[in-house]
Amino acid sequence: MKEFAYHRATQVSEALQLTAQGDDVRFLGGGTNLVDLMKNGVESPSRLVDIRFLPLAGISETEHGALLLGATTTNSDIAAHPNVRRRYPALSQAILAGASGQLRNMATAGGNLLQRTRCAYFADPTEPCNKRAPGSGCPALAGAHHNHAILDWSESCVATHPSDMAVALAAFDAEVRYETLDGSGYLPLTHLYRPVGVTPHEETALPEHALITGIALPSVATSLRSSYRKVRERASYAFASVSVAAALDMRAGQIHDVRIALGGVAARPWRAGVAEDLLRGAIATPERFRSAAATELSAARPLRDNAYKVVLAQNLIEVVLTELAAAGQP
Ligand SMILES: Cc1cc2nc3c(=O)[nH]c(=O)nc-3n(C[C@H](O)[C@H](O)[C@H](O)COP(=O)(O)OP(=O)(O)OC[C@H]3O[C@@H](n4cnc5c(N)ncnc54)[C@H](O)[C@@H]3O)c2cc1C
Ligand code: SF4
Image 1 (cartoon, protein in one colour):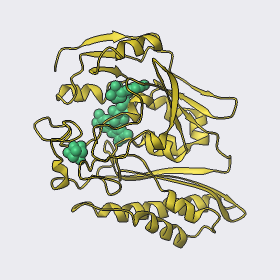
Image 2 (cartoon, helix red, strand yellow; image 1 turned 45 degrees about the horizontal axis):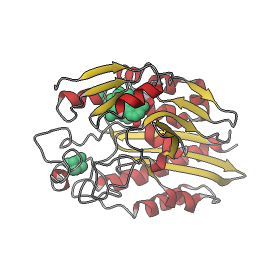
Image 3 (cartoon, helix red, strand yellow; image 1 turned 45 degrees about the vertical axis):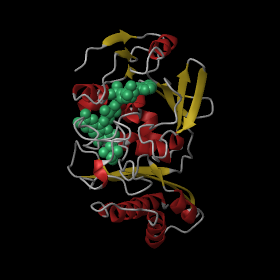
């Protein structure tokens, strides 16, 4: 590992100033992704600015009923929080479906959103990879890609985003709040990750050197039920082959509100807006859920070895929405 300087910041302004001093300075959250990447030579920062001692941990409720998750709150604390479990169960379930207890105790909310892809070529500096070394090529396109994207990929990169938490946050219309030396701002989670295009190394729409300070979860109706389901190659300690975060609000037998987000299918959490539009106002039946899921997935462009994800995604949407509809009946 390349030698690096370590600085423990205690004020947000201090962290921002230190990080703006160079392109190779990185914020350190729990370090569960960044430090791994430093060990295998994918990342080689000259300085780490430890942000875990900033006053950014904790979960609070705003006057408008939104829940604010501080950026350095651990994944475990978010998953266990009574308000998260009661109002946003899909988020708690998504976090608990990821990594391990030890990792979730270390991992932070901000770091989870900005964790890097699990594409094996990206993690191996002896291989070409447009995301790690722009312009060097994408060996996954014709190589090992059974767990790569089926939606919205480009010839430059077919990787997926690995975060489970981000998928649930996308379904709940969460907002990512950040600060830079020029001031503060926010991005809807669905706009946090850039479309892949020809610049897969430019992953987010955050301004340069931005520090994520928190995530806002808008208030939801008490009648909105939600659930997260993840299919993976092992029962635990594995990233999603496909996952779904879904929420359903049934009123008088009709679908009043529906949210669907998919993981493991694209370089960002995939909000299934086409299916949602078809379902809103409709009577809930498994056939209708199946048909809406099929229409959503008609946009998929599977690679040579991952067409199984199209069927998997359709089935997951149908099963989870059918269960939520049954649970919502009086
Ligand atoms: C064996 C293993 C299995 C895993 N399985 C899963 C899984 O199934 N599902 C899943 O979702 N995840 C999984 N993970 C990933 C894990 O969730 C992430 O490593 C973790 O969430 C990253 O959080 P962190 O705080 O440790 O981030 P770090 O490693 O500290 O940081 C990650 C990146 O985010 C940047 N960063 C951190 N905080 C901020 C901030 N506030 N503002 C701006 N930039 C910031 C850092 O500079 C770095 O670039 C797994 C990890 C391992 C090692
Ligand atoms: S899919 Fe993306 S991350 Fe993987 S090798 Fe291709 S460019 Fe790199």
